[in-house]
Length: 315
Image (cartoon, rainbow, N blue to C red):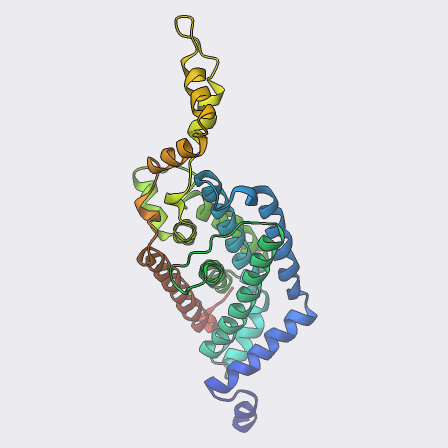
């Protein structure tokens, strides 16, 4: 019996490729490959909606980067939210017979990493096809596209690891899919991007993947150097305001237009809405990447710890 068990369940390192092969077969034969076309569809919808002004104006960059973060987090959550809980009885049985949880999770880490890389490439490709105008200046690697790709990958992988930990915690796929929307909403609300937060609520942003992803993307896009068009558009709406028989806003705007100063006006407006957290420096980007790496590592460790006690699970 011991020889049979040893044959079926070799050492920790030897088990990793075995379970990676199992995951690869599941990708092909259990429709896990659907995550890739779904990633392309979501990326296409998002870039069609917000890609026109991405990296062109401060408003467009904020909205576009937030949308990219949403795509990455959704991809990460969808990748692994069911992968553990759907075969929990199998894991419990095999663990009692010699499965090493660290090997099993390591196989998942490698598999999910490759899946996230492919999804990142798909997202960048869709953005290219949609005509998104990317900057050329790089802060980290010498290539803006590589900087952007690394950031998108880290966001996706951190979300993937969070979802993997949740899948280790819950007992069935129904519970996992019920929790996923709440986790997604939490990440989006507490990103610190589009929704202004104050007091205790603002403190929660540092514990989200979305905040560090958004800050990193806006930094790479050089948000602070871009024009802000909201002020000009707002003034345009009030150009008909009359004061003592004259239209001061319309007169001022007409003068700016005649002198070709609209771009300069929007550029100057942007200097008043610049943000220290988006300062165009490599240090700023790295300060965002580090939390994403830490979160991915912590969630992977949590997944291991949760499964190590699977034999005690009476559910």
